[in-house]
Image 1 (tube, rainbow, N blue to C red):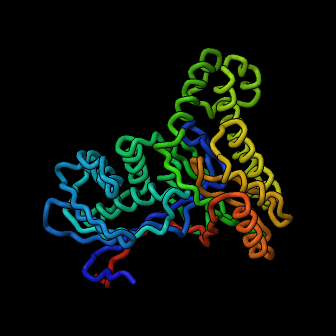
Image 2: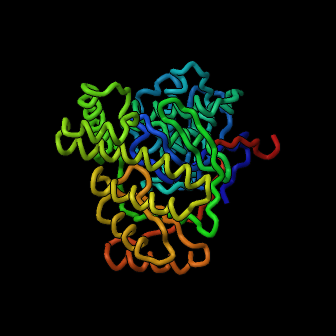
Length: 377
């Protein structure tokens, strides 16, 4: 067990799973994520210097960041996310106190469960705690997003950081990414449970085509705005798209079609979850994956193998890739009484067809940011 004696605060933020609503957060759409019990935890204490000293429970490395030179650490292999988070919090007008941080990440890296958001959000919340501030979760989320975009170079939407910061135990979140209005919906799945499976193919959003997809949706919006009075792609209705899609080149038309239809799927999924119609939710999840595969082209061989195998099992009513794509995790809605059999089958089927061994994670829907005093201090 990690020795945390001498630290003052234990600050955690969650990884997230997105139930449905993929690649529409940066298009102004509504998404349906949930915070996970897989978290990044930061143990922190003030050190009376002008440095943020960072150590990890999973790495032998240590890093020391000078609080007056935080913009200079983008090149770091480890510590760049923490440096970017501290810099953006500092630029937002908050006091940065020299401190020692011990980072303990249980969100698997490269899994599509937003380890980067959990790291950014928990680091900012830890900096606030050690400085004696009570941080607003929404402000923390927006600052963490700025760190991801301006420091790490991933032109992401707000969903990951918002879910990591603002999640609630047992609740799915219906988040309007344009207005940041958020409703919480009980994640009651009846006879089914959610199984998260990591294809274990390494991927990096900044090195992938994630930024390219965002640029494509922005270009599609500009073209459609010649005919439509809309401020974001998520405002385009299926009827409007049907009338105007001819304006778009083939690739942009495919990207926009995914966004328009995925926004509609989120609306239907909300109704299904509120009504307890989990079978309908499962069908929508299947449709979402097909759209990501065929129109948005963000899946890949390994995730497709996982999803295809899952969808072929009689206990599974829905499976899709979750997260930014090009690797990462799938989610599957599976009958509770067949979950163990399903998991064994899925892992065997995947291993037969790929060079990777998948992993199933045991995770619950949990709170976002949590702050605790260590050792009763």
